[in-house]
Image 1 (cartoon, rainbow, N blue to C red):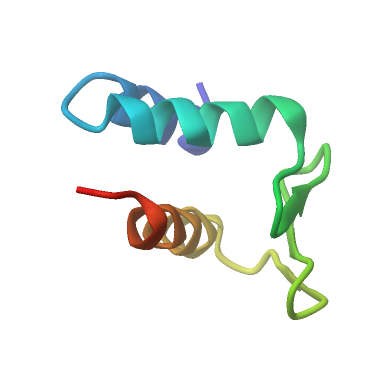
Image 2 (spheres, one colour):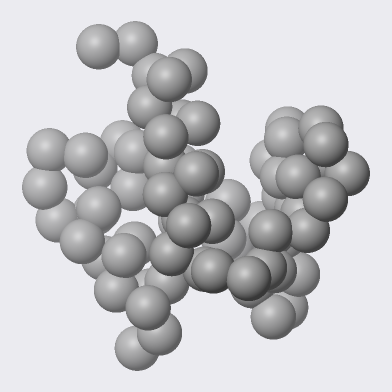
Length: 73
């Protein structure tokens, strides 16, 4: 199991299930409104036209925070 898969599983197994589903959907479909992801799990930020590939954990946290900011509580 990759780090990314472990993070997704952790998100799916608790109160953040809707968030986990959004992340899982992003990983499976390889795209969303702001980001693309390639087969090597490199995430491309379409808004800023940059790859964010140096630190996968930072990528996941960035995307996680982006979703949290847009998710009504």
